[in-house]
Amino acid sequence: MDDEYYVRRAMELAAQAEEAGDVPIGAVLVSGEIVTEAKNEKEARADATAHAEMILLQRAAREIGAWRLSDATVYVTKEPCVMCAGAMVAARIKRLVYGCPDPKGGAAGSVLDIVRHPSLNHRMEVTAGVLADETAAQLQAFFKKRR
Image (cartoon, rainbow, N blue to C red; front, side, top):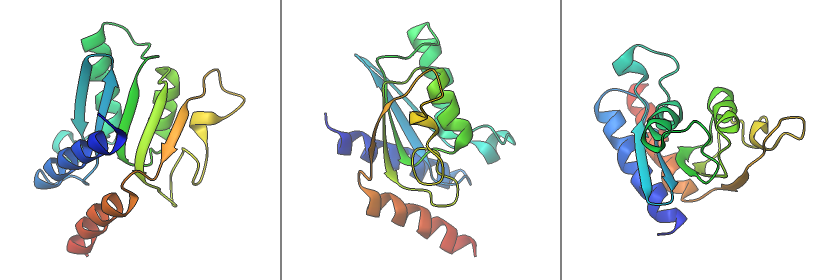
């Protein structure tokens, strides 16, 4: 499987989030044979922290049986925010792959670079812009409907 495959799967999860009334963001974590999936559930849970990435890290830790996810790659449709980027650093994620950048709040290089900050105890490899146009279009279509 390649990066585009998992970002496309994350886009399918994002579509499910949109159907449930949430911002369409989806995420997939791959660690060896274990594949974990999540979507935004902020509205469904009435919880500001229920971002796809946060739910994903919690699920993966339960499935793997450890909070250190040092062999894992996270695929997400949009560049993670500060909270999610910080959680990925704390979980020791090996690699982050994301679709479109977030010029207003991205914390993997756009506004801040939490995931590679030299002062933190962990840094991860980042592959940005996988299916960037498609993931951006998915988000733009959602917000266009809302306005």
